[in-house]
Length: 77
Image (cartoon, rainbow, N blue to C red):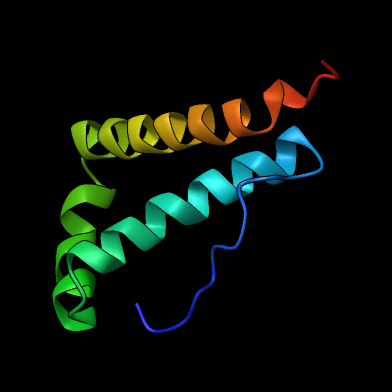
């Protein structure tokens, strides 16, 4: 957590917002399990699990909801 990489939730487009949501999700996993060896060891288990993939998609969707709200859903007020 040394480098400040998240300076804003504001994005120009929904596509950029979705990419940010994906990055937030991936970073969350890395912060939760900082050992890369453990991450790589566990990846085949959840990468081949319908439940694991559904859970990952759910986390991305929640992060996208947050980013979309921060961007006023990309609409002018």
